[in-house]
Length: 302
Length: 189
Image (cartoon, rainbow over all chains, first blue to last red; front, top):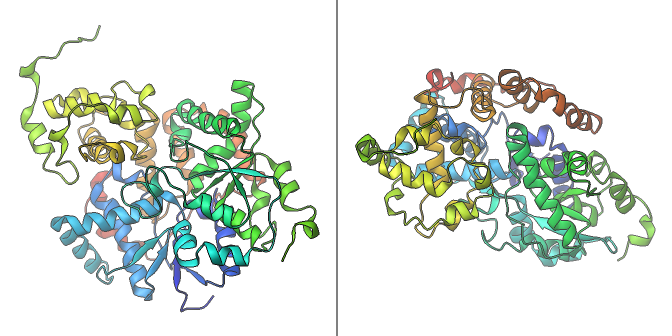
């Protein structure tokens, strides 16, 4: 990795754990796009949706430490692929900008911790970077193979498009559809694309969380989708990991691959099966293997 | 049986007034009770009070009724209520504030897994700087209802065989920088 990487990368806990396929596919995709990515050194937890319910001050400061570390490296763009990280980092910036007492507290904390003052670090989401910095035209040009006859539904989840972000329109986001189409994927209309998957609730109020995921999957099936494409590690996990349970509860034969946008784009750009983390799928494994491994020659076009 | 009627004299209007002075809670009083928040909330059917009712009760100062409700813990912070609210009330942030106050006032449901998870999560992050998904969930289950571990076994196995389950306890190098978090000592437990 070059020290002068334009994009700093903030993994958050999920991309090192249950969402490791997101990290793998993100790094592969950005490598194929010749946009070097460098991991933020010594990053700490963003606080996710959880820290805010214990302490608002500490939640803001946790995010501020990461932003200060990013500032220290000299990079201006901090990639936050996890929707919760993205929202938390941006929210913290907004709190500092709008509330003088929070700004003072943040300044004091950073000074005590020996970190630089906050400056303009831009928190970016990979979806929006693909759309704005790379652009549809370039994605189209760089596409070396396309999926034939696979219909996908794009699913944004909640936090990336909600009040603090610039990823896409909060009510009717369309950029993921446009990106998928640009790399040759057939996209279906999916009206639940910003409906919440329950986030951490699948681990706590399990039945409620699983029910939300059932609704999302069922609607995708009804719309004729064969796979769902996500941009959030928790959405991917929730939709992917509980399908066996959903089959048992409802008797419906749902077995649908839940892919990361970076996996689909990375594959179209020529990435390999394993370096895109495609071997880590729990649901729809057979389909994933069928789509992404076989008939390599036939899918390649120039 | 629990009493169903609340009297105005029991309301704490002073609390409601104070409440609106906090960051992101300023617009609470402009609520028009349209119910858009409840309509858009993916979890309102599981709640004991709908988001609209929470807004009404906070505004009228029925502090304990709100703080004891499970609703605030069922909020998944998806922000759809905040985005849809025609009055631009930051309902999700109000829910966050209520969660914090419920914990501080010891009015939260003790073995309800959501506050337990929050406490375990923050404890881990405060001490090590990073969350470790596996350990947080394990500790949450042990403290709230160990039986759920049986149901989680299948998911755990699926994650293990696909290389997505990390048992490592993450830790940042300069964890000492976190000692300056202002409320770090009192916020957990």
